[in-house]
Image (cartoon, rainbow, N blue to C red; front, side, top):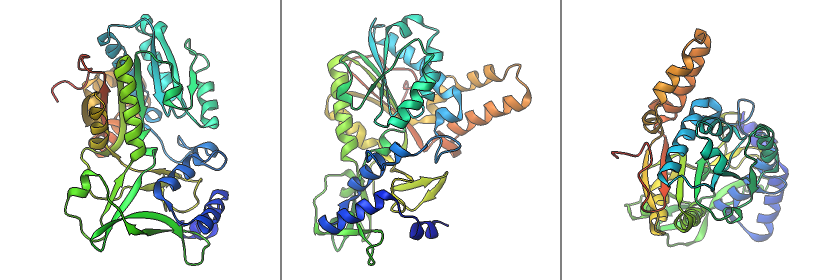
Length: 371
């Protein structure tokens, strides 16, 4: 099916990229990823209904309301540890359809001072997703403000949430070939009717932890300079104004060799260079690199810790029990099943990690004790 789709289905963005490569030469994987996801007219997040059962993938907040509720309670405790500021930013990076923000605000209403002091910011560049967020949050007592970039958010103490945000930031790929590193590029197939990977003609020097290992022919290293730069800006904002950033994503604790660049369409794996703009593109997050970027800019870092372990520490089992109490067995089983998916090691509980980046001097937030 995928091979047929790859040969038969041409997208407007693919035509644009083919014309670009014909005139200017191969492009980096990072540039390809940025265009495929964020092109203002043809990019995936600008044109597709990506998230949910009817979309291409599903996230933890969409699977279980407990995820957002526990995060809401975590935010309240983190806010208290900051001295309960009367005005602060509550920021979500890449808020999807607004489900996580709606759930965490519902839970945080237990502390009226928290919700009264919060200014909600949603960092979202997709007009399509902004509309969905607006609809879902229209009854909230806190009216969100949308931002295109981190620099658009007003300076203030901040609590920042990022769920499956960093995995969408562009990566560069480097491949070990004939004793040197070459950048992996996106060029054209021999018939010039489709896209194909190729290597740069010149060797490159790369500054990546994985490159210090003893590579073999064909080994690949992935580096997200975009993620490192974003983390540097985020850390600087926290140092200047105080607060925490809580990050959830799938990835690896330590930098290393290996390829994780992938595409997903209709909840199935998809060839990454097929039908650009019609499939989601991601890469596993290098948490060691993120942590180094944060520490290098003066921030404090807790974790990463497995998502399942973190949620259990926040009281996942107790919340499941409370929600199931008095419910018909079928409904209770749905609640248990959702909690299992987001926390079990064989589901999302281990491959997904949780990292907290903070202004120095703040108390260790809940879930990160005894690491």
